[in-house]
Length: 211
Image 1 (tube, rainbow, N blue to C red):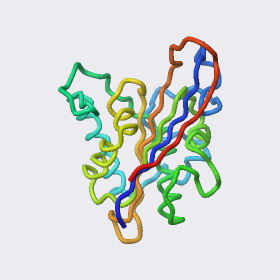
Image 2: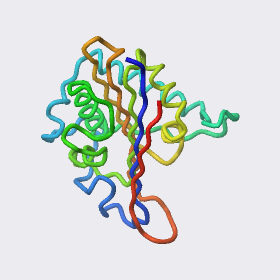
Image 3: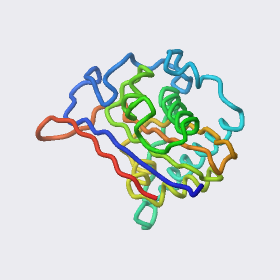
Image 4: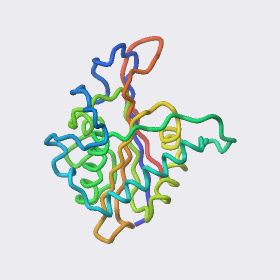
């Protein structure tokens, strides 16, 4: 399978307080141990995970962290200043794993799940509240480095992964029937606080694909 990339973003504007429903439709505040997979029904099938798949996820996460430390610029210009490290979020990892497993099992690639769920739906089911969500997909990338390189070649994914808008990250990987070359990788980024905006309050979502 040739590697392909997809990305989607949800934006909620003009929210004044953390308790306001965001992209995910609300939910309980995350636990103190943010990196743990939540003990909720939506995450039951992905709490225990294949060791090799988890290692793939960790390698992707480490690569993204390095890029942020190096202040990678998507326009190819010189690095400027550091950006904050992303917080590893178990709820977002759950959402990423759920969708990666769905795509690998059902044999499709796209942001709409086999149950018609959106990226925002999948995050909401974990109980997390995010004020913005970005989902990046790769199908068929043989290595973590190759997967991240594909994301960096896409302006929207690159900006989401290396910029300052998002502060939470969860990565999910599911191997396909023929190994990594048929596997699916999902990165879900979230913003845990409202964005400071001016003007009319409103909400919207955008999605686009690249390959």
